[in-house]
Amino acid sequence: PTFVAAGAGGYEAPVAGTLQVPYPASIIAGQFLVLHVVSQDASASITTPSGWTLITDSAALVGGTLSAVYWKKAAGTESGNLDVTLTGGTRCGGRIYQFSRGSGVEAAGTIAETASDSDITIQNVTTLGNRRLACQCLWVQNNTTMADITGESGANYAEAVAEYSNTGLTLGLQTAVVNTPTAITGGTCAIGTATSNKIAHGFAINP
Image (cartoon, rainbow, N blue to C red; front, top):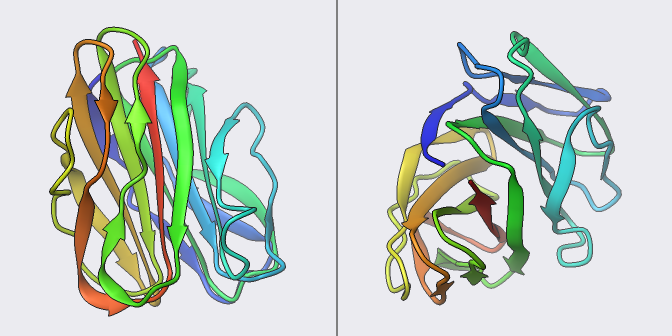
């Protein structure tokens, strides 16, 4: 699997019940889509959109924010906006990422932190087979920048696309090609502004 494109990103504050997340342009049947949605509220909930499957979320980790990542195999008819139903949330955001192919995911996990500093701790990912694409979907409770992940071992992450920022949140995607079963451990992502709430969702896309 390889990264193809990202949608523009959607944002709403306060949340009125539905977040519109733009699809990337020119989606082809059989491609692999990843949706990252964040709702910044202790009582937030996100309804899994029809046809999508949850990869991992932060429900048990951060009381003030719910961040969730989903996947689906593209039908080729996706266009315009995906409507995501939410409850709660003083602000929310989302983005859809498009990949050349994929049959599912593995090695999914989430790490969240509340210490105020200028980097995001990265979730370890151990791939189980050949020709995987390791991914980190990142969130920061700040309008800021993200650098390429450094200090990781086993593979090298890099930004697949420039981060999406809006008032009070930033979403990012970093990927690493993994040709054989590999444990990718450690690493941090430097951010432009110190903040106390950060989340990293790590997983691998299967070919």
